[in-house]
Image 1 (cartoon, rainbow, N blue to C red):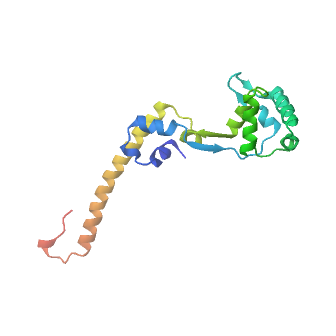
Image 2 (spheres, helix red, strand yellow; image 1 turned 45 degrees about the horizontal axis):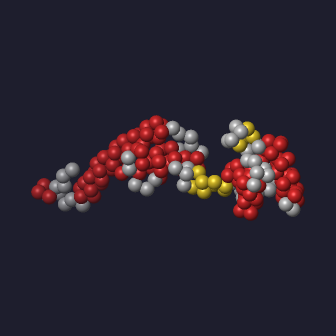
Image 3 (cartoon, rainbow, N blue to C red; image 1 turned 180 degrees about the vertical axis):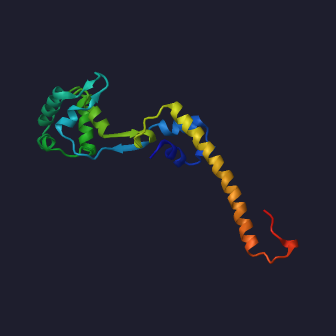
Length: 176
């Protein structure tokens, strides 16, 4: 979906001001769940904001050791081949391991797999506020133009129907 299409898909978009539309598009409001199969390699690539680095090999080692210690051998094994991790129990395990300090950054794995995202992100758009405001202006102008064209075409259609059924009497001739 393009930015213009996304803007026009919002309820009552034409009556909203640009700031309201920007906030609606950029505020996290849509649940994202990654249902792809995850492997150890994918987990290693998860970005950790606190360090500015990937979870990496060392994070994977900590996670594997913690999971083995908590009886999660099946999960460790499955991650070798890859499997979806969106199950709430697995995500909660990652969060608990992080909160307890056993595997720092593990919550970011859970947050990468399941999180609330904006309509922009949901539609794979990375637009600045200026770009959004320009698109809103363009969309509103195009709607005004189309409304004016529709009004004229409606009048022509009414005239066409009236003239088609006109009986030829000059006193009752339809006017455009």
